Length: 462
Ligand SMILES: C=C(O[C@@H]1C=C(C(=O)O)C=C[C@H]1O)C(=O)O
Ligand SMILES: [Mg+2]
Image (spheres, rainbow, N blue to C red):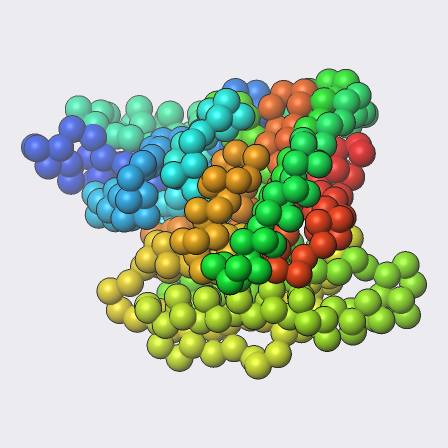
């Protein structure tokens, strides 16, 4: 049986090698197969021994999870990052040899997973030194779980002079090593140091922002801050992911490692989902806590739905997203009123948006037009960004920016990387922001950001 499969694989590799033109030296060979149940989380955990950067993604509906290890190709971009990334991505797909019988399943075959900085114009600090302006991995190995079916993809470079049997052996060995599993005993992690970064200055900045807005120059500015933690030992990333999976429903769970640092979180905010040309986006802004009883919870939710300040915060996002989508889509539709989006520690105002992506546009165009929405930047975009750039104490890095994936079959999804933290060995920085309007109260906004940090804080032993 194995022999037959190996022969088939050799044949595929042989055809791929023969297709390498004389002016090319290498070719990306990608092969996907169905496998028995092996959850992406197990794979992520087991892959630690390779010592390579990993990524993890679970969608909010819990229908799709992917994990990748290593990077056969890294796509990095500085200036004009959306366009550059898309150009390189398209070129890779054009030249790759892709064996994928399951191309109707999203996020199988050649997939690029990555993210980017919130604001490339803000000077970078030491904190984010391992993360690029924009960085996507086409992993060496990847597991996709879609509706309880499991798929395994290997991406490998082949050369004109390669022998098909050798490459087939290499793939076979790589797969065997990949699925060799070890079990890990859960570790008890404890916070030994906890530092709010400049809370007084932060509240002052909120005050300053309200002053600017009272003069009518700007209508909304989102301001974020940082909480720094030290632990008794190195943070175990798979354990954090598992706890996020278990506690944060209605959220995307993500992790992206770069040079050993890990950006991780559980965000409720979809930026865009694309299935062929069907597009889905989400307006999420306006926040209240959850109640302690069902009755209290309903009361708080009702008040949130009718609260003038929160409805305004939300409305800025709705208007901007609608305008941005109209540039690339037809049939843009959204309900007139938001609904509640309940999370473990918070509830938000939520308006879904659908549209049909017009020919000639890609998910990268949509992300470019959307980011940053007024849920993370403000209104108007340029003026609010300028204020954040000048006055916010934090280096946001990848916090608040798009994170997600694209596949070779016109599917992709990006979330807004909030409710997140950067883990560096035995320390972490958590981030949270809030929409400031002219009538904002700094103490209340501080409290809102405190609650927004709870999901990450709780899974980190706080
Ligand atoms: C900025 C964050 O969240 C954003 C701000 C919100 C608000 O101010 O009401 C709500 C959801 C998000 O759009 C964050 O969580 O860090
Ligand atoms: Mg708010």
